[in-house]
Length: 491
Image (cartoon, rainbow, N blue to C red; front, side, top):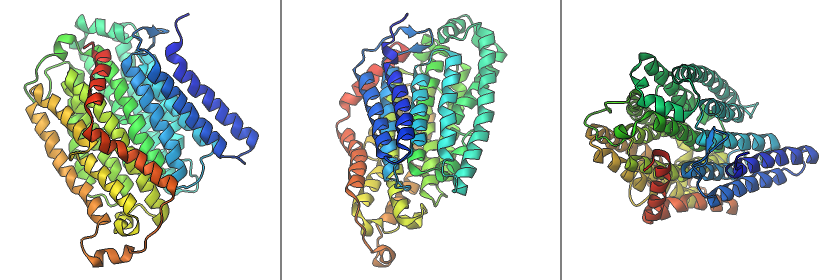
């Protein structure tokens, strides 16, 4: 029997899920806070255990690798899960989530952890489905909400198509390699398997599945409707944790496909000369950045705006994988941490405003500074950070990511990314200017102030504070990100 230490966080989440289910059944829903506390405790305990574990490069059962990268993603997903439960209790629904909701969140995070550690194609696919199926249900849990029902149905349909395409691509790859192991795939790549046309077909089909999970163009159609129809907390959960797990799995696959000598080569154009999978990722990055920002310019509903914004951010992150170097992947890890706090804060604050105003339209945010300056300032900081303005965390993440792109010689890609950042400034600032009216007449309709509960203040402050602090003191995080990256690409 192998050492089961790396599986302890997953086991703890499984125990927490069972405890939540049994507590909810035995209490018959009369004490809904107890299951919520158990779920948060499960996330915190699993995250702390993962944080304290020593990285292990050994493969557990031949399918999971608990290296520094896998443990970091475990902590990441557990943190997002805990914050999602808290945000749900303070968001637009403003009620304690039921046991079934908590069970689905726990199951999805468990799937994300397995996905981020998978080094076997079958395990990777099963983990994908373990993440996707609870997500479909989470989106449509408000049965009386027609928008949520429509969003859930679209999510299921797009998910089924992309899952089938990915499974077919994986089957082609397994047929070529003769094994489901990513290590075997790496060996096959050194033997010239990448030159076969059927491998190119497999790459395109696999990319479809990954692009759906990370909502990259052209497999992004579900994201705006799903984020708008789901509660804000669920939208934030899908935009952050689900997307991060998809990137983690993509990095595992690309690490097996990309030979070391190619990984350290210098770029000289729009896309790398090879291998083919990196070229596909590069095309997805360009399309996602451009279309995501262009579509966000026309949005008037906050959750749809954040959805298109997340599509654009997926493009930025895909740039790091396209270039594939130590510095860009370390920038990717740092950017994911920044993205965690920025996006969760944006969705959580949006949920608080929607709860008060009954709408997520931009008009509901007009004059927010006159009604509650705390939320207005907090959301403004998040918008500045998402744009990539100093001195916030988003600026540091983009700085390190784009520095790696330019350092490897991909000037055209880097300039395109920066231009897209300039475009994003317009729609993020639309939110800020709506909250802080420049004339008395603009703010008259929203002059009635309302008090913010202490729990809402603590949640918003807890999410926004890292955006400010890590923007000023980011050096230790950068060193940590480089150490995490080395475990994936071998330094």
